[in-house]
Length: 451
Image (cartoon, rainbow, N blue to C red; front, side):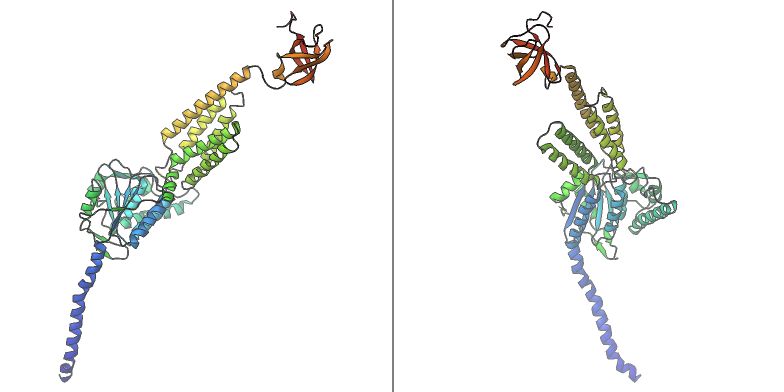
């Protein structure tokens, strides 16, 4: 009993310290929550193909948001094309982000494709505008053809596990994941929100409606920390791409890369046809390098790329080979087929050259080729006006009496000539009828047999 009495003061001290710690925890957490709530809200927009260049831009934006301890980073998806090998890595980065990430498919009418399926799953909060969709009719997981069936199955199982895990951890439905990964699936915003639980968190008309809908939502990050978003009445600050990033994003557009390649071929051909001291060749080289920068960011089927080069060669050869347009027709058919199959659809769903660009290029090349072939045929039908053959039919002045041999003057030079009929005196003019080695055959201009 005495011992208990002696320990009672010590117990009171311990109990007081424990109560003090309990009281200080909310006070310490409050500034942190306030700092999170008061951090900036950043937004980035991706409207084109999500290639390695777009991924680099989004990763830079994510790092800036983390460095600024942003309240949220909103990624707005406006296009459907995506290179799967790049978008998968980006999705993993978003899932492990140190700030809340919101992926928003907008505006209305957007089909986010494979990129939407991956990034909406990885995002802490998934939002879509009305009349939008995500997913593709092709599988979301399709390794290269040179892998074994066992490796393909393991890869497919890992993709399904990863996508399902992200959605379950965020309280979203994963019922669509297996079908989308194996055979392909497309979900509209209405279908996604109607699932139980929903496959997305928010349907918002525009950016302001999205910020209003984010107010008060709790986000759990990969490290287990939780944050309550305070976005009501606030404005998101855009993180725009730099000049270099804008150029790379433009070059990675499949239609732009294709058109640059076509213009490069035309410039190089024009240099050979009409030499310009290397000006057109230099322009063609710049265009060619620019197109290759874009092609290297996309899964190009190089056999189709070779087909494009051969198509250009056939069209150019038709100007010098008497095929009467046959080579041009074959070249145009090869160009259209190669352009339609220029990119691997399994590795990059939604990535393709726009049909209008293919038709426009085919029509322009056909028009130029038609004009060129017409001019070549017309020139072949005309008499030669240059060189030795061009001298036939011209008048020459007699400088040494033709009896019948002598000398005549034509085109600034003296030629040995022989008069076919009769003789010609110095100063007379004779018409050239032929060339034999270095001797001209001539006739007097008053010869009745001259035609």
